[in-house]
Length: 423
Image (spheres, rainbow, N blue to C red):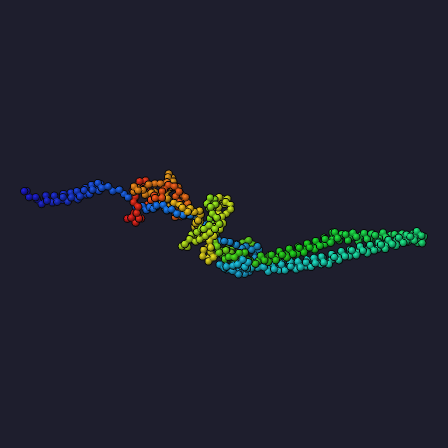
C-alpha cells in the first residue's frame, strides 16, 4: 500500500472538514421540510351567558351647582363693608355687604318728612275741612230757606194790607223785592250744597289723596335706594367669588358676590330623543369623577320636556349628593345612566364584537373542528361590559373573546390562557 505524503493528508482532512457539516445541514433541512407543522393561534373563548342585562347610557358632562346667584347691585357705589369671605357658608337673606349709602339715607329721610306732611294734610282734608265746608253749606241753605219763608210771610201780609188800603203800594213792593232777593240767596246756597255733594267734596278728597300717594311713592323709592345698598344672599350656599375689596367702587349690574348651592351637583347631559324617552325621574346613574376611585351614585333629576333647538337632543340632569363638599363644580365627568333591562338575555363580552363594512357586526367562534368561523350577529343593549346578542350564535358556541382580531375564516385556533399565547 502506497504511503500518503503529508501534503496529501492535509488536503484530505480539509475536504473532510468541509463535507461533514454540509452533509449534516442537508440532512436537517430535509427533515424540516418533511415534517408537517400547522401554526395554531391561541385564543380565549367562552360560551354565551344567560342572565339579566341592563342598558348603560354613557355621556360626558360637567358638574354644575344646584343653584347659583351672581349678585349684582342696582346702584353704583363704593363698597363700605364686606361681612363674608370666599368659601363662607351663607343662608338665604343673610347680609353679605353694605355699599356707601349716606346720601341715599338723607334723601330717604327728606322724603319721609314730605310723606308725613302729606299724610297730615290728607287727614285734615278728610276729617276736618271737607266736613266743615259741607256743614257750612247746609247751614247756609237752612238760613236762606228761613229768610225765604220770612220774606214770603211779610209779602203776603203787606199784600193783604195793601188790598184793604191800610198801607201804600210802596211798602208792598219793598216786601215783594225782599222775597225775590231771599229766594235768590236760597237758590245760590242750594247750588253750592249740591256742588259740594256731587263734585267739590269728591275732588277735594281725590286731590288730598293724590298728594299723599305721590309723597308716599317718593318716600318708598328713596327707601328702596337705601335697601339696594344692602347686599343679601338670595339662596343658601357657599361664596365662590368676591372680586372686590372694601373701598372699591362696584358698578351697577356688575357681579359683586357669587353664591353657589353645592349641596347637590348636577351633571347635565344631552341624549337622543329615543334614548331619553326611556328614562324616568329617579332612574339610577353613576358618575366617574377624576381623582375619585369609585363611581359616585346619582339619580335622574330632570328630563327636559322639549328638544334642544340647536342639537335636537334632550337635556337630562343627573343629581349627585355633595353635602360633604367633596366634589367641585366645574369638574368634567363621565356619566352612565341605567336604562331599560332584559331579565333573560344571551350576552357575551363587548370585547368579542368585531365589525367591518362588508359583514357589519360579527364574532369569531372556535368550532369543533379546531378552526375559527365568522358569524354575523344582531345586538341588543349593553351595560358597558357585556352586550345582548339577539341572533347569530347558539348558546353552546365558543365565542372568541380575546385574540379574534385579524383572524381569517378557517384559521386553526386553540383555546387556552393568554399566557400560552404570549409564550
